[in-house]
Length: 85
Image 1 (cartoon, rainbow, N blue to C red):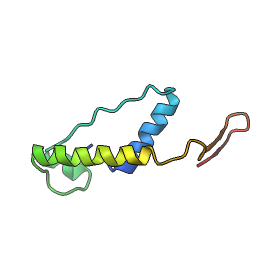
Image 2 (cartoon, rainbow, N blue to C red):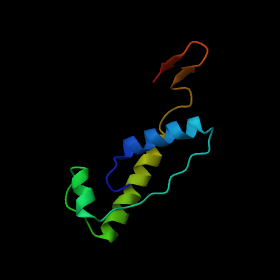
Image 3 (cartoon, rainbow, N blue to C red):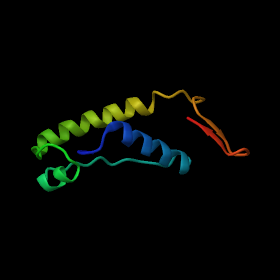
Image 4 (cartoon, rainbow, N blue to C red):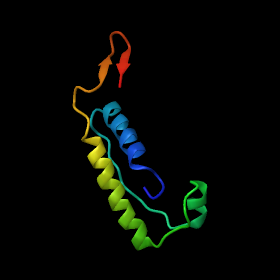
């Protein structure tokens, strides 16, 4: 959660939720390691308190993005193999 953008998290979760027929879950986590921050090209590591505050913001943003699509906004026609996003 610390180094992943909310848009990517929600897209991954939505895909997993669809593939698993509604059985997806998410257990957010944080990292306060400078080495891990560098792997993602991010700023220096933050304190645990700041990391969990940011994680809360990421969870909220991902949740809002996930719920922002109308149920019929995508075309998933398995018979023709047509998928339009």
